[in-house]
Image (cartoon, rainbow, N blue to C red; front, side):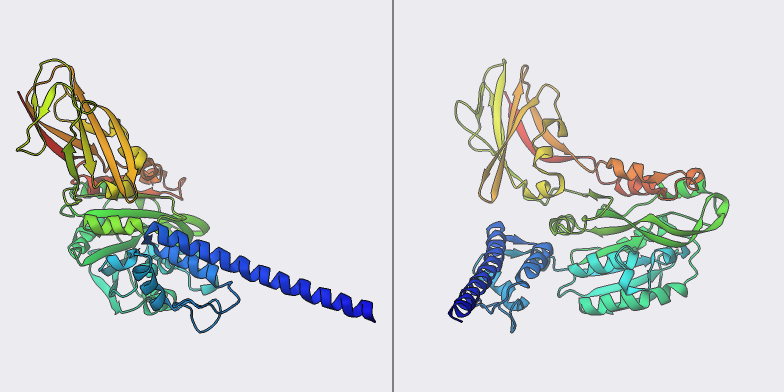
Length: 458
């Protein structure tokens, strides 16, 4: 009996230690996750959702001010307050103080992308909308509109929270689409019209397969129409997804056929101001599980990029800095010269293009060919990233030197997912006219944009 009692005692001790160990393991995991969030200083929806997932496994009530009423629950309001006050974090989805105008292509093709069954909605158009778009909606007002081919609303609604929006997309969108008779998608008319809504307080979102079609015209005429498309120097963000398609599809000469159980590309096109598009990109979840993304920026003039010419023997050679005027240097000798510019404020461009792109001198152009960028060096000091441009010349001449950056080039995935109308029957998983549409949308956003200027005198 003593042996049995002793065994029970040791068993109880072992189980207790194991339970404590598990609790510590859970605690260590969410504590580590929270430390990482605080260290990063910028909190995305993805960070927040991941932390909630980790913390939900916590088996005991904590003393944290953001602890919910039950173990593993978070009081979201208190948690956001904590991140701001204790960690000094920026909550990225709050910084986009924006209303969203979501336009859904009401053409017959769109019906094939919609699923009614909630259990199997993840790979559908409405499933993507629920997963992606509703994460943008915290406190902002959302308008949703079902479009005809001229860019007019067949049905329209407004929502004050994400649960209302989710309910509409999951339960009612399919029925409203059935009532539409959209035979065409005239994007050369439709996109400029809805883009007028985009301003400092409003972002436009178009959800569509982006197939430009007109049942009255052949494909050649349709592509000609796209050459005149103009969204008045707005910036935009295109993200593509492969989703399930079950519905009617049209080939060349308006041949109608039924497609079942295949995946076709569907797109979300965000139109807005440069700072809005950059903040959307910072959220870091829209491009997940996508076939590709593309950002076209109308202007980088408002990105607060600052420069200064550095003093010191290692930084300048054969020139002297004009003290009274910023970014002005004087040639001392008509032989080889060198000078170094410190460039601050490139963080937003890093979001769009990455550090390696910005550090490659091949991605820049100088207005005077006698000058070249010999090297670009990146140094990081906590939150600040400093780029050092070392510029040289073998034959220096007086000039107003402009340094421009190459941006807005169409990525290869757009061309790879585009198809000629005559090949569409063989390439059912591609988009007719995608390349022409996006190329013409982006053409007014210049490929070479001025990064900074300086004056060189003799």
